[in-house]
Length: 251
Image (cartoon, rainbow, N blue to C red; front, side):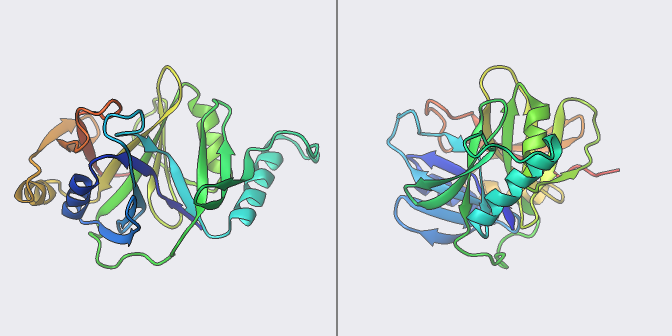
């Protein structure tokens, strides 16, 4: 299995909980400083952070899998088959490595651009039936090497989906929910967070406004995007708004 589940660090977990609930997500885990919210497609984890710290307002790219060891094996096999039929040296670099994180065993995926992310074991596998069926969690990988990022996501089993433009972008979906985007960017590779909505944005805009989160719709080249004030606004790493894009029709 593969599910999108980025981790967002914030000192404003209460405001984020209100926003995610207004978006139609459902809280499925609450362990104080660790809270998980399910959409109908993908999850988002909130991790407590000290106000004003380097972590406050930062999102970390991440996924969930069913069996961490098997996921690592399949990822390394996929990379091997792409590059060479020869068996790698035992001490040679591998794109997927089993690691012990503070929350348990995980698999670290390393990409050619120096970017890495964790695949954690899913705590539960069921899709939340009470979540808004149109909402999906989007994890974004900004990179100066989009081709390398694309190959890495193919190795982990992400599914490419067509995009209506031909620039340096790539869209993927995960088998068990969520969207992964690759976007060309200068500077060090980094993560981003957003959402996607399969339907008109006006009803969602009204719902957010009623919950105390004024939002505005921006018309863009390939669809509309809803922008709502970021609960972390003012933190060192926080963009001004959280975006929810209208799912683009595929040709």
